[in-house]
Amino acid sequence: MEITNSGTILFRNTMRITDGRLDGFRHAIARAVAFAQENGPQLMVEVFVDEERMLAYSFQLYRDSDSIRTHWRLSDPYIREVMEHCTVQHFEVFGHPDADIVAALKTPDGGSFPFSVSPRLAGFNRFEKPGES
Image (cartoon, rainbow, N blue to C red):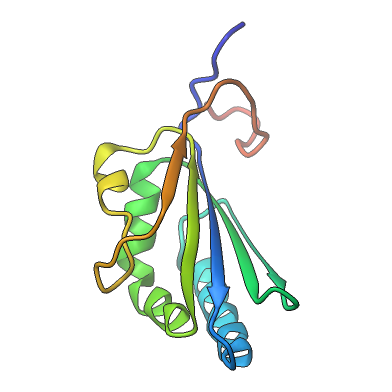
């Protein structure tokens, strides 16, 4: 079996929405996603909400670790706004991020949260345009 050499990295963030903050969370997420769509390096961003359990799930796909660094630099105010309404319950990283990315996995105020990193085994994507490598 050939192991893919793709540099893509997928983030899955499970967030617990603070009681009474669902509307604020929705507004902050909408602003953050709109900003990322216009300015961010992500290949994909999707956010889902389980209102009954007050959980939200964010999926973000990046081309590589440099894209993650760019996202963090550009989006810090938006990330901080979202974090006013929730806490990270668990953060999952899929792929091979650089060591400094893993070391920097903390809340905007420097707090830690549970996370895991699962290296890629095999796969493919269709994000490259024909003729690009």
